[in-house]
Amino acid sequence: MKKMEIIIPHRKLNEVSEILKSANTGGMTHYKVAGRGITKAEAVAVGRGTTQYTPEFIPRTKVEVIIKDDQVETLINRLVERFGDTLGGKLFITDVPIVVDLSTNMRGESAI
Image 1: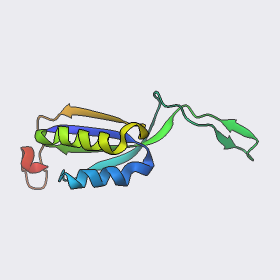
Image 2: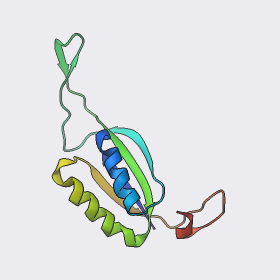
Image 3: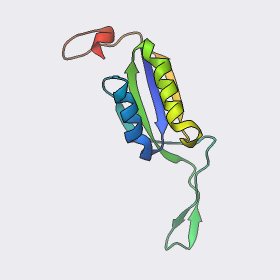
């Protein structure tokens, strides 16, 4: 099993969710984060619009989902195909050795 972490602009959350649903990934978790990287934040007006401020950190949404090993390449390809160079996000994949469903005590792939 793998843990896929997808960092995206807030406005793309529904589209990413649909891609994950269409691949039968099960559940997902998302939350608001902020960070800095290659993409620079745009200046925003503050006060009465007379001053501009460029924030150091850009607001994003982080999506986490546990997937089966055979879904990894398919999901990477779907996300890259759909968003290409326009997304401005990142995708991280790590191994997950154990998953346990706390309500049923199911383990492994059957728990996801």
